[in-house]
Amino acid sequence: MTDLHAPSRLAPSRLALVPFVSVANMMRLVHDIGLPVMLRELADAIEADFARWEQFDKTARIPAHSAEGVIELMPTTDGEVYGFKYVNGHPANMKAGRQTVTAFGLLADMHTGYPVLLSEMTILTAIRTAAMSAMAARHLAPKAARTMAIIGNGAQSEFQALAFREVLGIDTIRLFDLDPAATAKCAANLAGQGLRIEPCRTAEEAIEGAQIITTATADKRYSTILTDNMIGPGVHINAVGGDSPGKTELARDILMRADIFVEYPPQTRIEGEIQQLEPDHPVTELWQVITGAATGRRDALQITLFDSVGFAIEDFAALRYVHAKALETGLHDELDMVADPDDPRDLFGMLMRARP
Image (cartoon, rainbow, N blue to C red; front, side):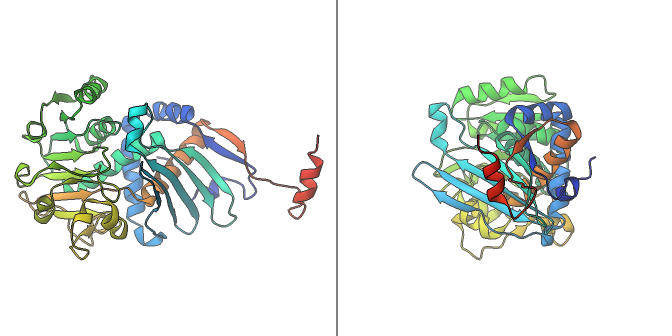
């Protein structure tokens, strides 16, 4: 696998043309690598960065809320490389034929401040989210798990199914969505992917026999996708959809029975399922499980819950991965987005010399 460390060491310190991965090139890159390989490698790349968690500058994402949704910035740095993602969440967009989530991201050299990558992240975020879910489940889910229920069959569902197949060996996916067309879309997209696909009429039917339950709905509101009586001992819950203030998917009583694992508590307590709980309710940070400082799954009866909201370090890992792969494959364009005069003090002269 490509060395993913420090993109600043992969580019000249005075790089004027910045590699840009467009949507078209991102899709070409995914097919060049192979989506199954990319999901596995991204899971490993994210895990590697979580293992060095304490090297990162960490802050909860910076939101701008409106009645229709939210726009957020997600920055971090490891001291060598800076990265941020711009992302929105607008659930009503789907009714107008638009994506509910769009994103782009940037990497920069901390020593010069020069950008070294600009990339689309709408597709990349979908892949990164699924890789993150599967990586967490590698530490938290029952080892013999082979069946997963996916409640909410929108844009994230296929990626989740394939990530869990690749990373955990899941072979059966049980699908449910309030919109039967979404379930039909997901089932059709997953046909021929080596999975047994079982569309279901209710959420209760979908979770029957599932060792892993993924919730990935899009409504921006407090919801109860799973009620307490639906969750038996020993399951792992991958809660993906509750990712902003006022948006949850699980009944509070489930949280009280589960061991809860999170990315970054100051962010998750605002945006995740645990916004329903007291501020001091105990949770375990996932990086501690990865480094061996805390225990993940203890026994066969334990209910584990990954309260996933997405964190900047995951996007940082994904952008570093794409940066390396884009340079390897040549699947990128170059943007003239950094003014770079021969004399750094003569920006005005550079401008005047460009006069028509």
